[in-house]
Amino acid sequence: MRAKPVSGSVDQAGGLAFGIRNINNYFVLRINALEDNIILFEYVHNKRLTRATAQQEITKDQWYLH
Image 1 (cartoon, rainbow, N blue to C red):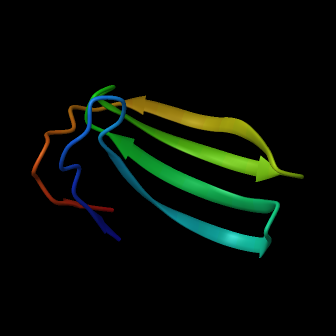
Image 2 (tube, rainbow, N blue to C red):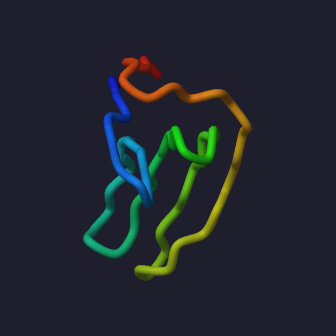
């Protein structure tokens, strides 16, 4: 996966959805340049659950490989 936060005043994020079982059950790995973090979310029956977080400097206009 490659993600590059570019612009935005509310969010500067990118990520990958995976483990998709159906429209209501899947995982999202997201990086966010405004919050300087990486978060793993799991959606179960369309409800978002935070499974893991890591503080990491995420720089705008830079590509990230995961």
